[in-house]
Amino acid sequence: MLHTLPRKLSRVLCRPVRVEIGRFFPSSKTCSICGHVVDELTLDIREWDCPKCETRHDRDGNAALNIRNEGIRILSMDGGNPVLADGGCVRPPTRKGKGQRSMKSEAHTVPDRVGAG
Image (tube, one colour):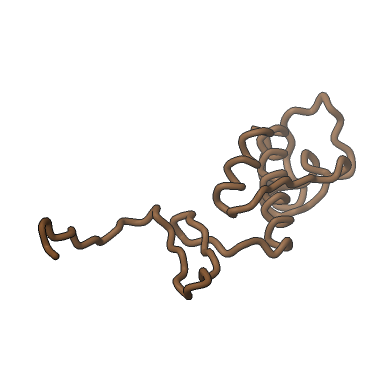
């Protein structure tokens, strides 16, 4: 996942993406539901209950959600390119004033007339 996520995000955002999350970010100790951070969580504890919202967490699954959410938070602060709902990029207009549109959405085209001219 470490190598595929930046590649997929680069396609969606139309620019190279690398998100670095701090080494000491408490991904395992933070409740992915309410944001409460537990003081002590030793490595031998694989499941834990949040004392604030009482949600039961799998340590690794909870950490994965928190890392994803932190990456999204960092990217949203970065001022990245706008993205269409279908994942295509919104590109600035070209010199001729015509903007480029996403080719991922269904295209409505009129077929060329054969022999017209």
